Amino acid sequence: MNDIEIFSVNEINSHIKNILENNIPFLYVEGEISNFVKHTSGHIYFSIKDQFSTIRCVFFRQNNYALEFFPSNGDKVILYGRITLYVKGGNYQFNVNTMFNSGRGILQIKFEQLKRKLQLEGLFEEEHKLPIPKYPKVVGVITSATGAALQDIKNVIFRRFPVELVVFPATMQGEKSSREVVKGINYFETNRGIDVLIISRGGGSQDDLFVFNEENIARAIYDCSIPIITGIGHEIDFTIADFVADLRAPTPSAAAEVAVPDKGELLNTLSKIKKSLDLNVNSIFSKRERHLMLKKSSLTEINIEANLNNQRNKLNQIIGKYEKIGLINDYLNQKLSLINQRLNHSFSEKSTSLLSSEKYKLTNLLQRLDSGVQQHVQSQDKELELLSTRLRMQSPKRILDKGYAYVTMNKEIVSTAANLDIGDIIDIRFANSSVEAKIIKPK
Image (cartoon, rainbow, N blue to C red; front, side):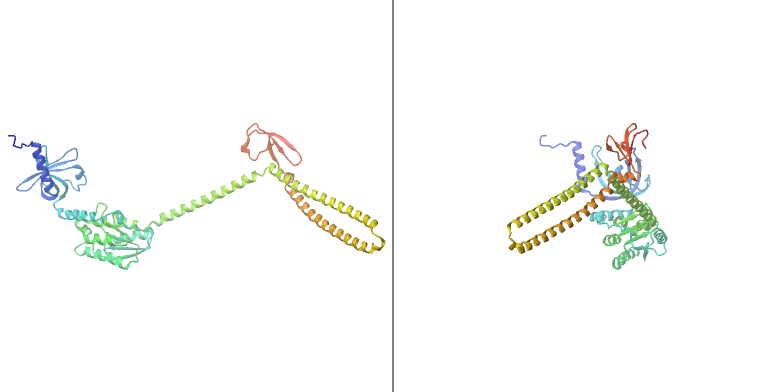
């Protein structure tokens, strides 16, 4: 007995489970539903059978939430999933991933297969999608020339933002429709001249719309360098072309709306921008005005007195220069008198002629000096007069003589009423007098 290998029931079931799940891939199975039960948890349990056999099935909530129809006993369906084994009960079952109504199941299977294939190739990735231009000048349209979709697109575009439309008529249903749609895409790609392309068809059955699940249309859309908007069927209809397109719209009218802006909204936006600019300009002017008022209020009596003191110092400097010039003049006259005295005592009558010549030169030099002094004095007189005029113009008394007054409190200038409180004692100074006042009610 020690050489005999004995397995537990759980080991056998687990082993069979691994064999089933690792060797049998995902597959499709067709049959009739029986024993249908939808649990409160959202999981669906049923059996699928044909005339010879039955398989138990489970359809978990995370897979069945997007089911497009409600199945019931007797329905013939196509299931996509894999065979699994429930280890605890030892029963194998079909784990359903997707369920299709058998009436249109083949088309849906083709749709799912192509969708998975193109998705794996990256045709649906956002990074490959082109941006839709905000303000197109020319819009291309591929649709039926006689269908209502074209008229809807025209009405919307001409109402929202009239642009040039270039229409490529194509059959939207039937065997040759996919080739004509691809031909239209290639036409616009070759001739260019448009900013955005709309591929559109009105509503219809799933069979009518299935042309837009063809692989040649999907690849033509992906390869096109022009931004493409699809507007196919109704809001609940999704096709492969919608997944590949740069933008999917639920209807033809919606495709036209996203292709062009709304002129009414643009005008409102421009109006708001204008109002914003006006507010900004007024705000700038207000700030500048307040800045100037602050500068003006900062020109207090203290600043004026400092300016007056500066001008007085300049005037004193000029007066000092006058006094120095007078001293120099007196000094030169004394020197001239002394020279005359020395000359009178030192030279004989024989030197009178030479003395007269030198005296003439000295007198001439003195006259030139006096003339230069006079010119300098006149220049200083003019500068003194100019400074006096400036002093008179900047004098606070001149401002007060015009009827103005200024207010001080504790010997400090009060430039705004905001600095005053009820009960404050202020001095109001006029041109020739001043009064004392008490603040009763500031405004």
